[in-house]
Amino acid sequence: MQYRPFGNTGVSISALGFGSMRLPSSTVDGKEVFDTEESIRIIHRAFELGVNYIDTAPYYCDSQSEIIVGKALKGWRDKVYVSTKNPIENSSGEDWRARLEKSLKNLDIDYIDFYHMWGISLEAYNNEINVPNGPMEAALRAKEDGLIKHIVFSFHDKAENLMPLIDTGNFETILLQYNLLDRSNEAGIAYAKEKGIGIVVMGPVGGGRLGMPSEAIQNLLPGKVSSSAQLALRFVLANPGVSCALSGMGSMAMVEENCRVASNDAPLSEAELVQVNTSMEENKRMAELYCTGCNYCMPCPQEVNIPLNFQIMNYHRVYKITDYAKEQYKQIGTVDWMKGKNAAACIECGICEDKCPQKIEIRKQLKETAAVLG
Image 1: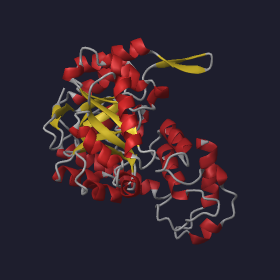
Image 2: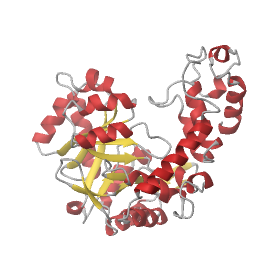
Image 3: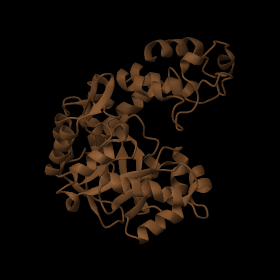
């Protein structure tokens, strides 16, 4: 296993982190039941292979993840760093502290190494977190009390809002999205490195879906990688600003493969990165035949997020990762960072086509998107 400095925290963490959001489960009488024994077995195998960073959250795995991780930590607590999250539900520091104490109880530990303000935006920071008697004050007190070691945050906001959050000076590390298909945070990662902020990447293989066989992905480096997942993970780890790639692992096979990739001390070469970037630019040009993302078509009177629908459709059309596209399509309108409605809400009024400088047949494409991804 390779280890990297985690910003200016003084800590070195494994290049691969264990994401505890997809622990093994089965369906019993129509209900998802998580397999505690198997979950502990695969977590322990990851620890044995050198993973020393494990990430969980209160609501993962039907609120069972923290409890299962806590059981897996027995005998390993002094060898691994624990990360969990606090959902900012309001501006009350007292409520924030109560949620922290609940996580400590679930995990059955005395302190949390890296404690995240969960999925915050710049707006939430200004209006709900950094306020009198709010979560930031509570976090600083909790750190003084020894309940948390490092105050950190996870990020799903617009890429341009990452740097102002870094500049607050209140956070030591960041958990954010970055992968072959979503490189919007690339400049922010470089800025974080410059400022001594550690970066953990979530979704390095697109929530596991970039791990699906895809000739379009593997052919970025033909003959040099054995799977799409391997290329996706190696691409993320080639970024000098990335300390750790966090992968949700639900099976022993995933643990073994990901640990094997993260133990490769020969990152992608400069020539290989150029080759990947060149191929991705060609794919981007191909995607722009369907939509350039200029946003002139917006707003839609039915609130359809047209550019987002087309971006997701291109995951299917250009990159041939249809399962990933379908999962992303389902999330439109259900999370803050994917606002609007999906293609099924289109009533074919045609207003968007009158505004499109590319003269794209938007109504036809939305209909196709809904049929394929819905």
